[in-house]
Length: 221
View (cartoon, rainbow, N blue to C red):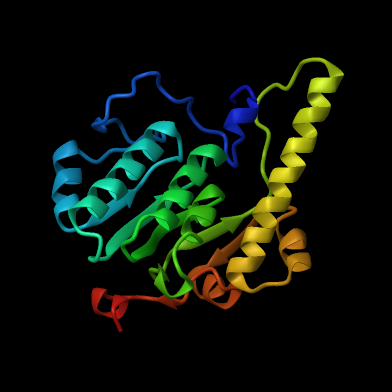
């Protein structure tokens, strides 16, 4: 478990970020929460204006996604971008860096959920317009309140500040979920008190996605 740091409030416990801030992602073993796509594949995907989010959300992954969004916008601000996502969630601050940049850049961005879209991954999904949020048939979704992982220690006054900040973060996330799904805020608050899992059809009914696509042709239909 990780020590809790306010700047690194997390939805899900995961491996700590590396200090290595090299821009190119490196292949790693499966099961360690890190990205496993080779750098040359990332480059080929970029040529097709495709971004893949396939690991826990941390600073390094967020830096890569933000950089790719900016590069693709500079290349052509009119052509759409497709993001494929399979993530258990992670750092709230890193996730909001991706969320804000998706909202910031000019191109239309379509997000396709494959596998798992959980925790902060669900918030990143909501950065796309509702019509551009798509699930593959066996995708799963999870919403819940922010988690503090690891040991929390310090003066009582600091713990109070931390507690107040996590409550503010929870309120912000609940409002965002309510605004983007159309669900009443009271239901979001109730559902996110504990882990709330959804299948692709359930996510469609909930308002997280606008369609469930079984084939590529369905993405544009």
